[in-house]
Length: 229
Length: 234
Image (tube, rainbow over all chains, first blue to last red; front, side, top):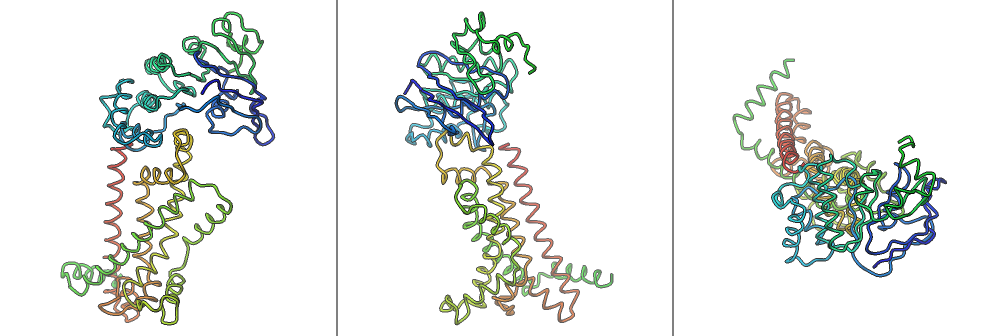
């Protein structure tokens, strides 16, 4: 289904331009980290790519059909067990009933939550809920996984666990597109960095190059921590 | 004060005596109002949920009308149902005016907007939190409505309870379409109204106390269920 192409994507609300104009393509293989300060438009860009928000103008074009999933900053769980949260997603995805339980359990094992499969999802800790959100995405076997600051609310231990699961997605061949405002996470998780500033793509480069020799003034100040956020 | 102490004695006597005539009145009250709350829930919960998750032209207007209808005077609901069910009315052929069935219909009409409007509000608030996640998973609006109804089931109990409370406490609608016929359509509120006009204030107040006690018990029960659910499901 890749590459995913953004053609002249622009988004404005109430007369203010929040994003764009952006022309970009996401290729298969590499992990893309969308980096930028709070309010730069990273989340908005991700939602437009995923199809949750329609751009004011321009087009989002997929090269083919396939499954995509998204993990949000704050996981939203239904008032049912961890297992049933996953089988619910599988049912929406049209997976036959007889296969759902097994696929859901496999996904829970993958993120280390098999032990709490029958527990109510909402009473799990923040880190566990986020891993459950990843398990829900895993069960769907997406070709592209969008992650919107998936560890922004988590402590370092939980963050490491989440990043390990994201690595597994990558190893399984899922295209990773994630936003973060953490430089460390961008270094650890990215193959390439797309740096967003004031709704524009200020720079896009392989991760090593981005951190060692940033081309744009905005990226340089962001990396040095000079911007007031 | 004298009337109140007499009333306290009277209600204690009524409760302890378990007078079969009184029991029948209490039972009919509960039967009619529970049936009405259930009918209104079956119709009102899906309506409220669909309005909450769908965007369509005229939606705002419907929300305003629904909210306004929460204040529908019982006598007006009673009058409308009376006109529909009376001999000359469009549903007159069924001959159910002055029966408990007519009372259930009138109370359903009265309570439906309350349950639908409160459901709409609850589900809409929840939808704000769930919308992106469920849309990301590819949910259709009808499926989203069902999912949210189930996920909000414990808070929706309050909406159903508000409907039941309104039904069991009203007198105008059941009086108009039931006729307060002794042994047939006499319920607690119509009895209270009747005994008050006859001057038997202790009996009226005693019945009022029983009515309050019933509603209080039911509310306590629902609160306990909600508390349990909150701890169990978060």
